[in-house]
Every structure is written in structure tokens, then in C-alpha cells.
Image (cartoon, rainbow, N blue to C red; front, side, top):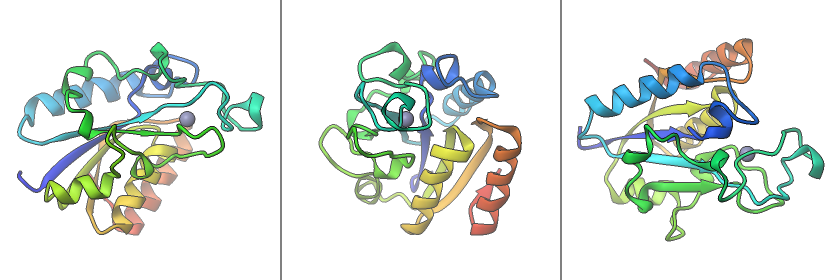
Length: 184
Ligand SMILES: [Zn+2]
């Protein structure tokens, strides 16, 4: 599938078993690993929440979340089973690095070279994006919607998601489907 890429959003330890552990995260990681192993021809793009220690999304600094994914900590690292697939810095997009700005969307992230996700996907001649990750209601949803708005065909891998709240997860999936995002 030459024109297809998979985007793995925030499969980072703080969202899996850390300060913001999400529901379904272990299954999401295992199912994502299985998917990547069986689709080795599809380029894999990673999104990483990567905050300075004083980020404004943290409760202590006026936000709504516990501290998480602080730059350089274990909690900010990609799960070890998936990390071998993250071997190209050009395909890893970091977000939330500005202390003053909340960024749920991986589409707003930048790679090490400072490129945006849309720019890189276009250089790769990608039309279809498969999106999975954590959490459905926040970073997955915002990433998927931004990709759709930018003209990509977006498909969510439902077995490869984790969520903050079960009802919020279901509602987000239904709303994304209404917007034209495919669920498989
Ligand atoms: Zn964050």
C-alpha cells in the first residue's frame, strides 16, 4: 500500500501505565504491534506528547491534567515493543513542547527537522492514513480530524485505541464517523 501510512498517537508510558494510564492501553499496544508486524510495507509515523516540566496543561500550572510526558522521562518514551518501529526521526512528530500551548493534535507536531506532518505526508505521496493510539477522545480525535480537514482519507483502527472514559470514547467514535472518518 504505497499511498498509505499509519499514525501511532501517544503510545507513551504515561498514557499506558503511568500518571495518565488509559483504559484499554495494554490491548491497544498489543494490537498495534500485531498490526505493524503484519503490515511491514506501511510507513509508521509516531506522535509524541513531549512537555517541558512547567507545561500549562498540568494542574499545577493552570491546566486540567496531572504532569505527564515530561521531556526525557520514562513516561514520555514510546512503549518498548513499538520503539523498534520508530527508527526514523523524520517520521516522529513531537507536540506540546511550548509551555504555554496545549496541543492534542499530532498534526500540529514537528519532527526533529522542524517539518509538519502534512508536509511530510505529501512528500511521501501519502493519501490514506490509518490512525491509532491514545486517547480516543483527545489526541487521536484531534489528529484524525486535522488530517481529514487537510484532505487525507482517514481510517481509525478501533482495536488499537485506549481512552480516558468509556462513554467519551464511544461518543468520539460516533462523531468522527459522522464527520467522514472511517472506522475499522
Ligand atoms: Zn500532554
